[in-house]
Amino acid sequence: MTPGTFETENIFILTGAGISAESGIDTFRDKGGIWERNSIEDVATPEAFAKDPMRVHGFYNARRRALGAPDIQPNAAHKALALLEERLPSRVLIVTQNIDDLHERAGSRNLIHMHGELMKARCTSCDDVKRHDSDLTIDSVCSHCQVKGAMRPHIVWFGEAPFEHERTTQALHDCALFISIGTSGSVYPAAGFVHEVRMAGLAHTVDIILEPSLGENQFTECRYGHAGKLVPALVEQILSGKLNIASS
Ligand code: BV8
Image (cartoon, helix red, strand yellow):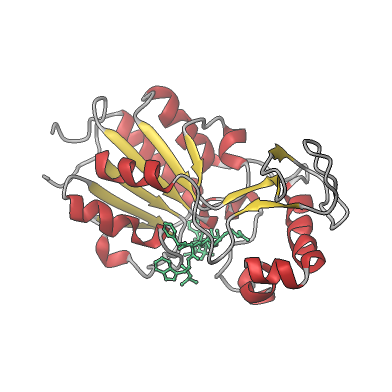
């Protein structure tokens, strides 16, 4: 493989909450993060929703309202990834753990939301999924089947299967470059992706993170700092053929 060129190679990009931090969206496990102020068992499991649906709706309604605020915009990292996809069409896949819509709003299209989307709601009666940017309640009515009280956030809770697992697994085995951005490597199966790529033995793996994370020793290279600065620099290196990759 010619060092640094990816015109004919696939690039798999995994993103986590850290890529949206500079846009003003809280991460989960940093100081003051979401899981410091809320218990997963109370707001992010199917059992929590069955026990107290209005508490869970309240948790996601507050985050949906915050995401809809005018000052929450894609940052330089989101925009750099959209540029990479534009320059290397059909070569770049982003699999995000994030439920915000900042990748789409930056222009990314080849995108999998493995943990779902905050701006979508699903009917548990007819399974219809639609864009939904206002509050959900236990009285919300499905616009498809008209059933009242069956709406839930279109989000993957702990204990639920992530979306598009087969397509994601296939892409992991087909990539020559695996880039992880802004994830602590705490949640599976996403935390196991870099291991899967290494077992396939074909890819150069890069971790972009504020400080050393759980899986740092599994990567070919780790770049510590802010995604808003490091991601545009990495994209520039890839597009100019200057990314030095380990020989496979
Ligand atoms: C499943 C939606 C079975 C909700 C979320 C082993 C194997 C398989 C499963 C498990 C396993 N062990 C345990 C499990 C179960 C569980 C799990 O992993 N539990 C954990 C707690 C141990 N997993 C599941 O239940 C998953 N389902 O496994 O089903 C299956 C598997 C395969 C196939 C079929 C069936 C489902 C998990 C999904 C749960 N839903 N989100 C919501 O958002 O409310 S997970 C939640 O954590 C968020 O999605 C979040 O994105 C995700 C991961 O967190 P990160 O994104 O990494 O965020 P974090 O704050 O932790 O880290 C941010 C990092 O960025 C930090 O390092 C920070 O320093 C850095 N940073 C900050 N600022 C910047 C920055 N970096 C760069 N620049 C900056 N400016």
